[in-house]
Length: 158
Image (cartoon, rainbow, N blue to C red; front, side):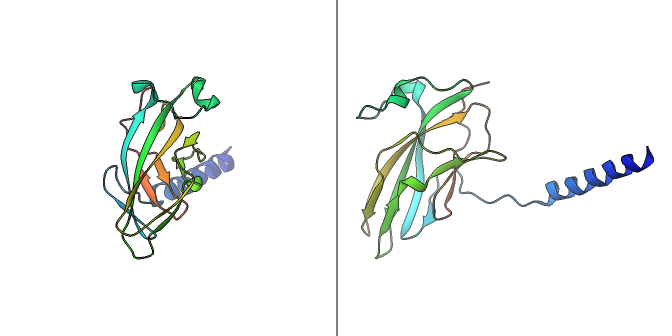
């Protein structure tokens, strides 16, 4: 009985040390802009779909059905601004929402797939995600390593 207890204690200490010393990857808070290749990106808003009943201009079957139990849907409004001479080559297919210990959530719908934004121009993109009600510390991750925090205003569940 002494050996298994000692083993459990050693394992708990090792896991505790790893958990307490692990450095979370930083993300840009909700509102400010993040640097992306060729310019900046910022979340302009996060709107729960049940707040306004919004649907995309074209028929999207998955959005006309209700969200799964324990989830809610949000529109993530992102503004991209090209600052550098080469502009931004935007590909929204690589964006996902992620959180601690969870898997990446792909958008159910997005307003555009690919676009070229010229220096000095801005472009707004809308992406719809289905998020767990109890999820915390969610971020919008871009294919280039961009990490934008979603904050907590979108939470609707208990």
